[in-house]
Structure formats: structure tokens, C-alpha cells
Amino acid sequence: MSALNTSLLHPKFGKIVEGVDLRDVREDHLFPEIRQVFDEHSALLFPAQSITDDDHTRLAQMFGPLENREAMAQGRAVEFKVSPVSNEVDGGVSDAEALHTLNLRANMLWHTDSTFLPIPALVNLLTAKVVPEQGGQTELASTRVGWAEMPDNLKEPLKDAVIWHRLSHSRQQVSAELGAMPEMRQWPDRPWRAIWPNPVTGEDALYIASHAFAVEGMGLAQGQTLISEAIAFCTREENVYSHEWQVGDVLIWDERAMLHRGQPWLYEQPRTLMSICCSATKSDGLNSVRIV
Image 1: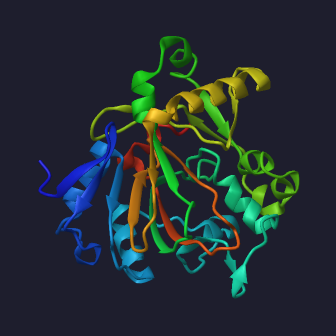
Image 2: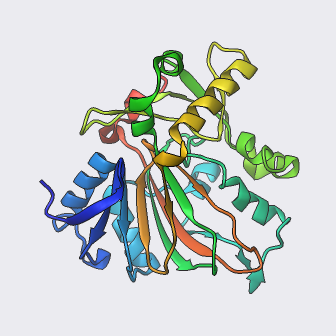
């Protein structure tokens, strides 16, 4: 059993962890307990932290290899940097209709990070640096819970399915111009099996995202309807946790078993979150979703 002081984040998933300073976490001190709760409950909230980019990076490295998209894209070593999720640009904020802001708005579709990459993400570690006066929440929904509760008529065509993912598919839902940008089209279409079993708990989760555009063996329209219905089922209102950010909060979730999305805010107000994803490995069950 975990020695962490935890309470429910949502009645069906997640834990709030109190009394832990993430700057004190080490591989042999607190992290084994954190990883256990992560595998069992899929989402963790650590309120009121004070972590630097270096602290953030060190914590993420305990989960696995840092996801460095620039290095993946260029096929060479590129210095890792913590990624801002922010409308702050050049000392101001980006216009509401600027492509930069539209890309943030695409994150308001229910999605899983990195399903379009050669190696998918295991985890996202997100912390708040600047928050608006209102809005800008991050919402979570468990696809482990969704899969367990899903009716058989929806579950049956998904349980052995292969789903194809494309970054530009989610971006063009917001803006055709955004979806056509070269950086949105640089990754080849990526297939993954639809079910990702957790190797620790044995529980299945639906692996799906707004980037998902086709189900192998189905017509395009039929596949997209199935994808939309499955996401809608997993994200029913009663199964959603909405996080009201406070500066310093750290929210960590399992990309194998969670959908998430941002919520809008007044874009003339700055909002900056800092994000690190870590890539999944064989020990995280990667081979169970990989198409050989």
C-alpha cells in the first residue's frame, strides 16, 4: 500500500497528493510510491508546488525517456527544453485568431498526447506558471473507466481494432490553414492498437485521441463515427474532472489511459503552463499497442 497522503481527485479516477514537495522526490525516495499510485489511478494532482524547469525535468526523467519532438523530427541530438503551453509571445499575447492561438484551441479537443509520434507518450507532467482570472481549466477523462463501462455494441468493434492517428487531422478541425502547416504534416500516419493494457494492474484502457482519423478495415466515415462515439462515451460529463489551475499546481496523468483537453479563457490575458511528456517503453506495455 502507498504511504502517500492521498484523497480522491474524481470519484472514479485520480488522486490528490498532499504533503509531498516534488523537489524532494528521488528514485529511491517517494518516487516508487508515486509511480504505484500513477499506475493504479492514472492521474495525480500535487497542489502548490514550487518547481523550476530543472526540478520539472528531473522528476520527469524518473518516469522514462524525455520526449524531444525536435530531436525526433530532425533525426539528431537536439537540446531538450521544457515546452510552454502558452499564449504569451514576444512580451505580449497572441491574437485570438493567430495560428499560435488556434493551435492552443486545437488542444481543447479531447486528445491524448503524441499518438502521432513514432513512440507514444507514457505521461504528461504539467505545471502552472501564469493563470488567467477565469477559464483555462484542464479537463481529464479516464479511458480505463470508459472502457469498463462501455456497452458491448460500442466495445465490440474496438476491442481488436487498429486506429490510425494524424496530427493534422485534429488541427484541421480548428483551422484548415493550421492543419496545412508543414509542422502539422511532418509525421507519417501512425497505427496503434485500440486497447492498452496496464502491465501493473492488468486493466485495459481505450487508446484514442482527436488525432485518430481511421479504423483499419472500416470505411473512413464509419471509422470516424466510431471514434467520435467512443470519445463521447468516455467523456460523459459525470466522468470528467475539471482542474481549476492555481500557480504551482502540478498535474500528472497517464497518457495510456486518459483523455484531456484545455478550456477557453479570455485570450487577452496570459496563460502559461509548462509541459513535459515522457515516452513509453516496453516496461510500460508499449509492445501491446505497437503494430509489428
